[in-house]
Image (tube, rainbow, N blue to C red; front, side, top):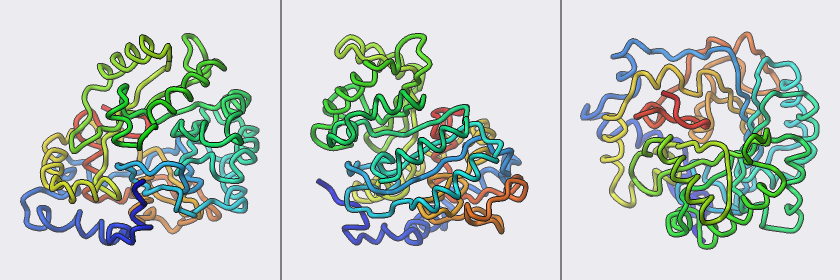
Length: 350
């Protein structure tokens, strides 16, 4: 099993080092325009936060998997876990915010010891769309997780699950040996309780990430292929496929550099820049909360330790009026969200 960058004591475990790489080299020499320069060309700088619609909470970096592309650098060796005190602060915001979507992520969010309590309490707040981002294998990892499909159903959770490909080879290459068939079994169990079935309001969506240094294909076409193969071979059904571009940070940045694909990948992102995608990037309507309660424009900025550009820095001081209209913090990784059809935690945006 590969270890997290933190466990390996890699220089890329340091967010400042990642930002140095993203700011220097081909961008410093002028071979490629910085993201700020690029969106200025289309009169879209600075990006401004709109009304909050999605509150995304990272409840911890602990995970039962160590995926090659992981921008969180999650794994079994990560101990950062959101405390109940911070969760209580989040719950106060959930009860009072105008956001219609609550998005729980990790790591594997289910591994937080307060996860079920938090879901119970947040469910009572009546959020319209309550998302849990699951890696699927956690449902099979230990007996204490085996009843999660029923738990999710009881709370009407919208499951968004990682599924790199419909083939074993590509999935296991990215996520580890045995992940494919474990994920298939988990999907079948979710189907068995009603998730992903035609006309079911128990939402089950899958997430595709490219397995190498290339951009995702057409989301609609891939969804058709995923649905056909998974139904024909495993009798699995799901609602939507989200195609997400791998951003050049953390373990994917490490992969790009080690495979000598970094510059080519950045050229591909810049060449695929789509100003239409900028209008709907997730940072404009989303607020990301870290495991320790600090606020970021998105999950990717969280991993690069780029806090919101506001005097409100922590969930305990939350003020929606002061956060709305803030200038979004950007760097060159933002090209990943604006390439081609665009990319967000909800898939294509353009």
